[in-house]
Image (cartoon, rainbow, N blue to C red; front, side):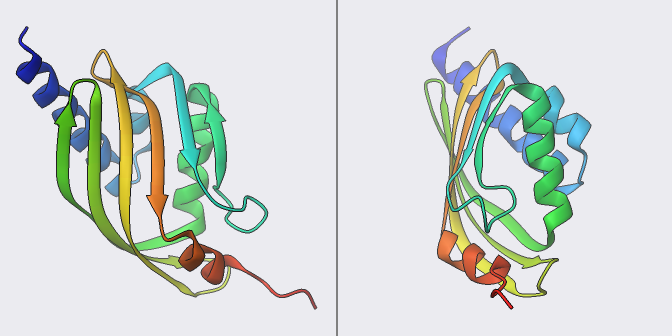
Length: 141
């Protein structure tokens, strides 16, 4: 298998996972993850319900279930899938609503994914976390 085939297969697997996310199909997402998956969503975990580090498929399932139960997705649009070796970088933009407050989250994003055997082994999410904090923050009463 040539390196370009591996890169194109990694991109195809990532596109398939994004399709499963868009459909809210957590089981299909988890099927595309390695057992040792590490997910890192940066931000304050006391405010953003899904911020933090998640290890393994069980925690990864919890991450995706929490994301999907915490926001309404209006736009989640990947724009570019860039592959190099075992890495896939995805750029795009999103428009979500925090279910707990009804406030909007609008941001560009960059996802950096490390692949192993055409499945995700590490996922890092970079976005405007201040937009997410503003949407989820609840002032103390």
